[in-house]
Length: 325
Image (cartoon, rainbow, N blue to C red):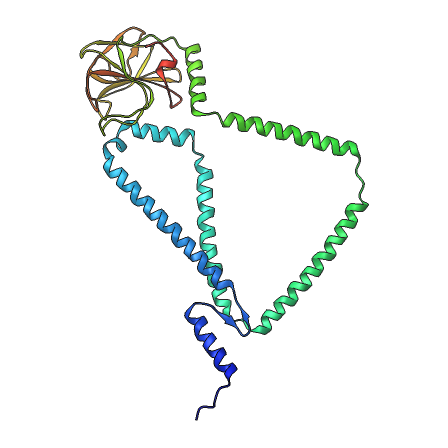
């Protein structure tokens, strides 16, 4: 026969049932607030995962709809330049690695916290006693350190010297940061000045600039939004002259550039693209003003023109900063 429960026992049992249904864990008379924190962490992680999945879906959708541009040579060159010049790969790898490790460490801590829900009230009391004793020890150590610091004497000259060296180091670090924080435009202008000092350029053809360097609003999806050179529109078959001396390091008919050259002089590479006909082959040396090709509309082109591009150490430079076109 079941014994009759008191009113207090009934209230306690009803509270236990309610707490279990709502995910609130109670240890005797002490409520453990850790599971709430755990559920909050899990909700945040789920939200981050959902955001990551949505971004991945968007990236895949964008890649499918713009596959012609993404698989083009211009896009690959742009990505390569961006990652080599703007991205510190080891630093990003270490950050991602630390984030992933901390993510799993949090999961392990959460599981440990869930497993520690069965700790008895005696263990909790012991932990509180240990914490109190640790606090007392820390207070004693702090007072000793204060006494040692109070008893120590340092000369004002040494303090001033240390301050001066620290200021000098800080100034050096600030100057280095400023050098690294050069904007892309400032770096391109600096490259253009260096190119003009060391290399003499002439215009490869005379014509109308149909598309300038930089961001643009193309009317067709096949034309990239960021233009890495200038387009000079002239009649098909117009002779193209070499803007500089140099050596042909690429003569190709593949990719969005169609028939195109890469001619190198020192640390600068000049690209002549969308040609109708190429006169030279890889390995040939070129003299400034020599006829090297004919204007055409090969590759990803909307009409006869010359795509003229200048690169210095893999970075694109606006040709109109180097010579008058």
